[in-house]
Image (cartoon, rainbow, N blue to C red; front, side):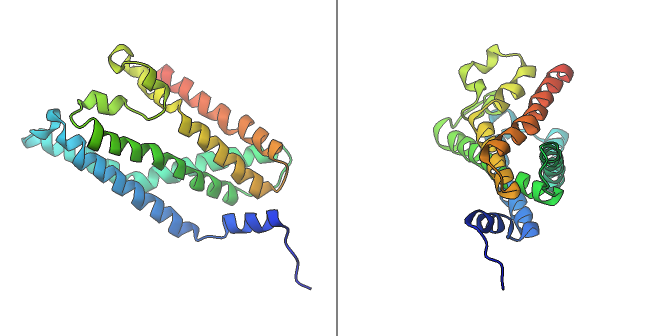
Length: 214
């Protein structure tokens, strides 16, 4: 007789039953489009860059092109690291979740970070339409950076203050749901797995960045 699946199992199968390579490609394409919009309709229109000519303009365009081309590589590295950390966390808590599923969880959770990017594009295209580059660079929606005037914060602390934001917390929640679906165990265990694996890695990365940033 064919096996009957529980609701949780059906949810898990639906969660992981999509075309992963196609999803990864679409993820890269969407981010590429968002990056293109930021570069061409916001950054290029900032006064400091609008009138660049000669070698300076060429270097600026080369750097932007390299950033665009590196998107798939950066995503692949990030998903591999986060997926490995989740896999180790599941193993430490005694749950057999394979690395491939953990990699997929990291990939799906990345959708959260499209939201602040879209908000940033909307903000500088329709609200703050004439920013300086430093105003643009320091801005991150719903982050700790919003509580400070960027000119009063040392540049090395910008990144850390930007990364401490509401969307990062939402990312943790999505990771938890992903682990919950994959492990098919209690939600409290999934919370513990993320809290003892990814979250310490994230905080360690911020601490390391502060140590090497100038």
